[in-house]
Length: 314
Ligand code: TA6
Figure 1 (cartoon, rainbow, N blue to C red):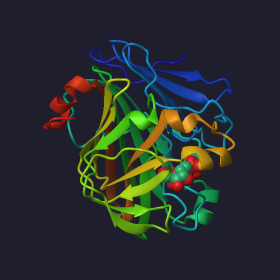
Figure 2 (cartoon, rainbow, N blue to C red):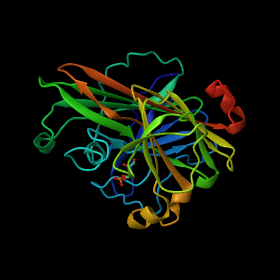
Figure 3 (cartoon, rainbow, N blue to C red):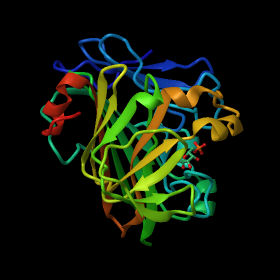
Figure 4 (cartoon, rainbow, N blue to C red):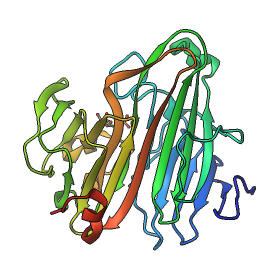
């Protein structure tokens, strides 16, 4: 067991092993919230509130055997989202072993909300360069604020000559009480690409989004803050993002659930994927250029969500 980044103000992180022997990093906030990150895939596999409540969904049938990513938490889709490209579904980053990065350069923006954090690093292997011949450095900082907010900051740098383009998503499995009691606010009237009909483009209605069937959509040009309201739990997830213009919304519903071996037939009722993403337009980096994509998640009592959104939640 070793202790990493540590300062008077902020608790540090500890490195443990999951039951498969894969290294995991655990970050704790002084008030008891916690986040667990697997070095396999740089995947957040757990985010718990100060009361110890798990806020992310993980399937009871999830496979914890690399290289397959675990069905749940926050897999990282890079350098390709979905199957729109030549690589495996959602790219290779979620199937690779990341390392802890002790020399991570400081983040550009200062963040006054003292946080405990860990920095992870991914570089392409020889095999990766065969299928995607681009030298990159992917730095991921995972942080937990004093209030238990979870933030992920990705920095992708082009470290060799040729420009390259990629798409990206934080494939976030939110845990919900009952999908039919959930609504998303902030995506009203936006255009979306429907993955259920060959990415055809549609325009969302004026109301908040609710769920009564399979949904697999990429909302393009979405606001930087949206809210996922769980009426039964009286809880709202506030999703803030930077450098990620799109939001992917996915629920497999009953039929698709039955086709996924690492997902329970009824589990679609307890999860909703809301991914901060860059899908519609690929991100292109010239030599030496770096892109930053930030996600911040807060879980608040629904009574307070308008304070976070700056407009009344219904
Ligand atoms: O985010 C939506 C999506 O692309 C869906 O089309 C669905 O395939 C989902 O991701 C899960 O992908 P996975 O490869 O993790 O089974």
